[in-house]
Image (cartoon, rainbow, N blue to C red; front, side, top):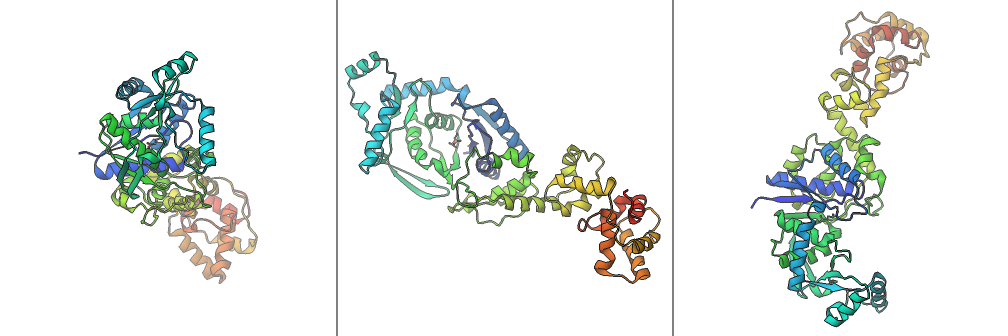
Length: 447
Ligand code: GLU
């Protein structure tokens, strides 16, 4: 049996770190097993599903490198859902209900006020043909509920271990709305069965759905997949992350926060697992380390500061070829490997390279507060060509001439050459600044 998993977002909003973590875990699971990964858009909620969100999902997954082997869109499959629904109606698996939302709310409120669980009372099952005819002649159209077996539902969850539900403790779920549209609880099972999904890996908010869906798989003659329910990410305070929290959308992490795809992947692959979070430069490394058994049941906390620190660690390791495109997009078309290697140890985000480009390639107002010393140093500047040894040769000579050492020697030179107190190693920057600029800056000129 070859492994098949799916990531099934609803295109009703931007992908959030919580959703994309599930995409990543599914993808890693598939790649590790040599199986295949399906991207399925759960777009049957026609009011809220938008093509731009569907495009956003594809863009985000592509950015992370999570390529899909198969693609499906639920709105293409209404005919199939109708067919399954018709069969379930014929077998009595689906039964018509006529309560209005207000009536259902009243029933729920009354049960809750008696301290009882708000389980649907199956009143509709007791309607006679005459009752139904009367309701329909009054203009009511039914919605359809799935008749759950009142027997135990059990599965061995890859994250939670053995899980047990009593069918009688669950409400018969509505699978078909009054307007005839099928709901997620049904469509997802039909797709998983038809597309031979072997493992359903999703958030623990779906645990109760799983109990219901296992019975639906059985009712439609589908093979019940293996389930894994991951604890949902929370923010640093333990609050759940909402999909609509735009600041944690993948798009904003990419476009506003300057996060590298491998920083996000390195964090999300390990968050809530027994593995330490370490920078990884390729998804292949994450595949090699992945094992769903490492996912713990404890609530993983997503900390944007941790992501930014990991981003910095990734940048410090990334070779020039991996950022050349991003540098060009920042307008630094002439940036080369020497520039990148000089500045990357000082970056948390690629966009910060612009500041150092301005130091090496644009006029800088120097902080030349020790003119006599700087003049002595300028007189000792070696002739070009300059390379990585120039700084050592030059400062050696300045030290010998002036007797200065340590901070007294280096800080005035740094301030004059870069206009700043801190920054990348001058050994790397000096050849990029070049002799003409260096000489002028040491003389206190903006150059
Ligand atoms: N569209 C559902 C969601 O986004 C999919 C859940 C599932 O994986 O079955 O919650």
